[in-house]
Length: 118
Image 1 (cartoon, rainbow, N blue to C red):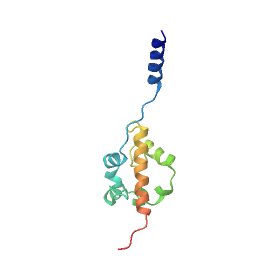
Image 2: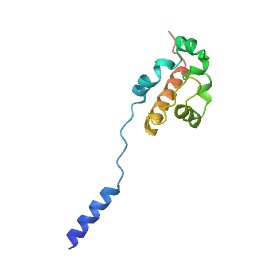
Image 3: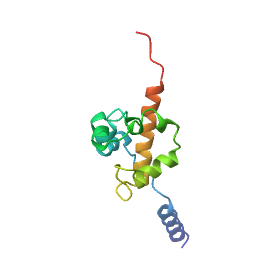
Image 4: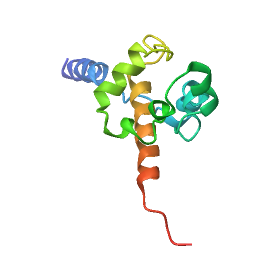
């Protein structure tokens, strides 16, 4: 009886232990969902800015205002869209959005890093 009880408790605990979420590739998602307008480097595509009559500085996620914009505000824009930017609500999971945001922040860090001497 003790063995059966131990087995049942072990199964119950294992069933309640959450599994770690799959690793999200923010760079890959950015390339698939965002780079068409924001460019691979995140600095914005001039041709898309012209087509949408948008400010290239707003499309620049690697620099400019996006650097100072809080994560929560950027997440809101991704979910809700803005002007010509579509909403990704229901198209991206929360962990995917966070992965994209982490990638964008890494682009910002690269842009801000001091350049080495040549």
